Length: 403
Image (cartoon, rainbow, N blue to C red; front, top):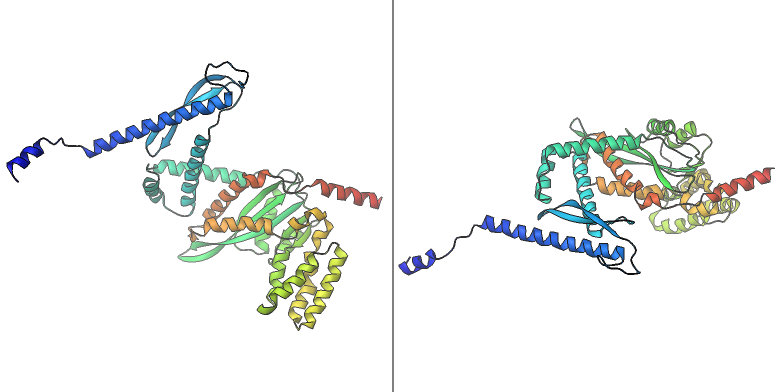
């Protein structure tokens, strides 16, 4: 290297890359903090209907100072000045979005733990994805807290009557003594006498048989599930008998979708569409008697088509799919299939599919319960599902006719 080159390099100021990066992060953090605080002021002015200290007839509220709120971001910790209003509660869309992200992170931590990921591994994952290493103690406390909340939610007293109850189960995999075994999670949702949907219970069952369903129904009844007028489910082994043991006055509606699938198993693939149209015509009837008459016609037609096994199945079981005719016509579309619960089961499967085999049955139950509790608190559980006044009016008409 020449002397001129050395002389030129001696005039170069050395740069500490780590120090520069820290300075840039601080600049970014201050910029983000200033920007968010300005947005807070603008949104507060919009709610008030006037600028600060402005006197105007359009003013709707008055400021009442502010309070400091910490907000963690990848750039670092922000200090936000949250405005306070005298009449209104100030909420900001950006902060609400941040809160949701924190909730999703907590949910992810819980799901990783329940799926069998070690606490040490969860700590490593949070460091890689979130930019901040969550301590082992934080993860353990978070999961113990959510375990307690889930158990409290699962065993809470059931209040009010539930005229309609849907039952189904989902089969998951668990590791057991070096082998992979099945574990069933049994779920019940119900429509209360106020017309809103709720989730009365979820339990772990060894398998979907009479013992498992009897234990589940005993659990529900002990917690106060009552007022059942109709139970909806498929024809799982032992479920119908268990319903009769614990709720003998309740009717049973066999899911027509599952019933169709049972019939299709006795029909050649090339004729499934034709038979499907015939079966749907039965349940499109306006009255119970016309549905029974149509079912007789379809059974005869199936025999003419040389589909005697399908005809036998229809003749033996179709009456179990017509129970919904005893209830208000406006409810029929919601109470003749198990679809309302099937949609929730699909969501559970979607969230548990990535797990593969759970380390034990309780972790499978906890993850499913976490998801169900979230669904219950969402729009699903806060929107009126059925007008139950129609059921009361129908009862009054029956009482009048008997009198």
